Amino acid sequence: MASDISVWPKVPNAPLHWQLQGDIDVGAKIRVVDSDLFETPARQVREWRDAGIFPICYINVGAVEDWREDYAQFPSEVIGNPYWGWDGENWLDIGRFERFSDVILARFDLCRDKGFLGIEPDNIDAYEADYSNKETGFNLTREDQIRYVSWLIDQAHARGLAIGQKNAAELVPELVGRMDFALLESAYHLGFMDEFSPYRDVKKPVFAVEYIEEGADPKQFCPKAGEYGFQGVVAGLELDGKPENCP
Image (cartoon, rainbow, N blue to C red; front, side, top):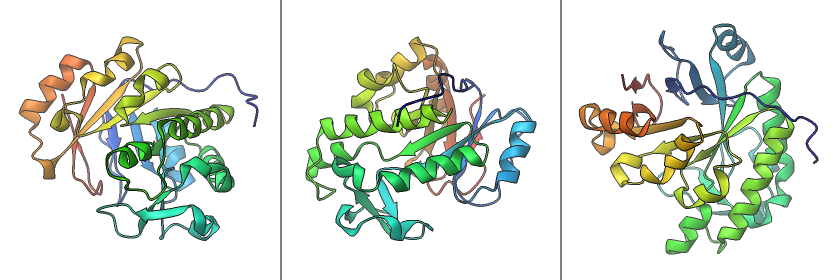
């Protein structure tokens, strides 16, 4: 699909509220909200935009969840091994994404139509899982991943939506020039914050999230996030409650 929209909104480098479950209570200083595509009503998105808050929709693009309303639309042959740690979630064969591209496009359309301004594409690191231990069941390659993510970027931008890089630190050199922000999980805990400095260098926001269950200590993490120029957030793994923002 050729892009007919040349401009999409700039994501603010400002405090983020990231919550995918439960009632969302946004604090006064929040300027970016990342919430679930299906669970968030258009009415809520409008209220955020009216309040000057930039809304981002969470979309799982690399795995499929059996509780989603469009689950049955994914062909069985592209559904792979279970995603470790999350019941009911299985990897997708992104090397053959054309077989389920219509489902992803419908999700992007819904994101736009609900009034969201950006997309958080989850699980764009399937090739890394295969490189280390053949986790997905599809023997995916870096080339498969880049081709799929490039398509995702084109489709988001064609709809006037910003889109961000979720983890996948090894892909930063290819993606930093095209993605609009980055969202990191456990980058301080796992030691890969530095890999996302190129986003800061080109003045694109980086939202760095650390998890309470992994021992996140705001007193240690927040100063480091500040040194990098990242927006620091401490949250629970289930992302079902109000996170704590670094000052």
